[in-house]
Length: 342
Ligand code: TXA
Ligand code: MG
Image (cartoon, rainbow, N blue to C red; front, side):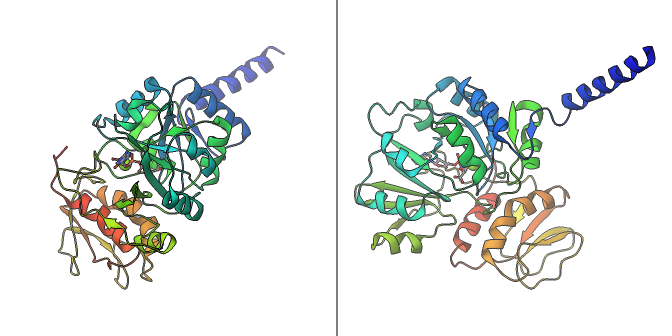
């Protein structure tokens, strides 16, 4: 009898130890209880990491400045960089921003999806000034990822979320990446598996009839122009004087130096190939078949893997400038830009 009790005690203790270590803040196969817990954490003013179809986000209640401040603190992000507000449904947007004929058409075409619109902020929107960084516009996105949607629905409010990486680092496309950026620093990471799109959402600013692509992404300029039946401006690669605050040129950067448009990597370099290249132990192929969608999905994850080799450079094969190729080249150029510009 006595030994039986001891046996049970040991089991319980082992279980406690297990819970205190790696699974403490990470929630696999999110269930209804996971979303209830996450919503509770958000309402208490804490941050939660969650997947979207593009990259993992670091979310906080967009109406709570104390909570949003925790995002900036965790990311070590410059204060002037405004955040994207995520909503459960396209219909919720009108509560926070003024929509016009263009934004309505685009919302109908691309929400939910990997598409963000920067729109004029409504008075009394209730959003924290820290989300907008004091601007009179705000970036809105309705993600299509099921886990993100369930979290937003359960929380029933706007979630401000940048990508879940330390400022300047490569965006995370798996829960492992988030964990390696923040370790146990986060109260909760919802593990919804790898992100299907792999690069951040397209950002389009709409200011009356002035329509500008601020960040290329999965939804291309051509797709946007087709919906609104007119041309849009494409913001030229932001330098150190960005139109979109915080669009620093050096961004998405691994520790290893990047060398672009390389067809013939040198010995001692890691190689990020595309199309018909034979890969070896220091190289990975974004898409052997030359598929840009597959390449976008693999981009950040493969950059991370090659970065870990600690070689002198990461050489990158040329990526064609068509369709999603613009977004991929944009991220690669930022990753290759001179460091220390923040
Ligand atoms: O795919 C995505 O968009 C991911 C997921 C988590 O939704 N989020 C993301 O957020 O990439 P972040 O914070 O890493 O990038 C947001 C970009 C920043 O470059 C910021 O400057 C710009 O959006 N932005 C936000 N609000 C803006 C505004 N009012 N005007 C101009 N740019 C804005
Ligand atoms: Mg980011």
